[in-house]
Length: 89
Image 1 (cartoon, rainbow, N blue to C red):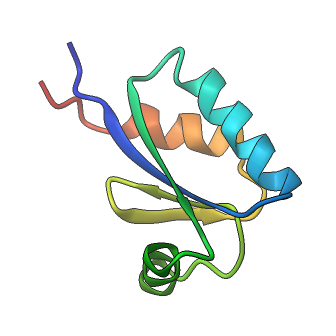
Image 2: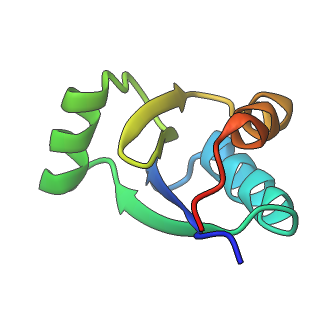
């Protein structure tokens, strides 16, 4: 069994791209074990994570604490990145 990938999703209310990112993560999660933590970008924690990761606007996505993307999430890019990860067992 492969350990789940830690995903942090920085979101805002009434954000169409955030809803899109949640759907992408739901689909990708069927093929890759993911542990998703959603953090509101307007919260203090969200602001700190965004500054550290260079996230300019929602949604921001971090993989194992490392910046991955912000704005509209590309399912293809995410699947490619997860496919290249060494498996942790």
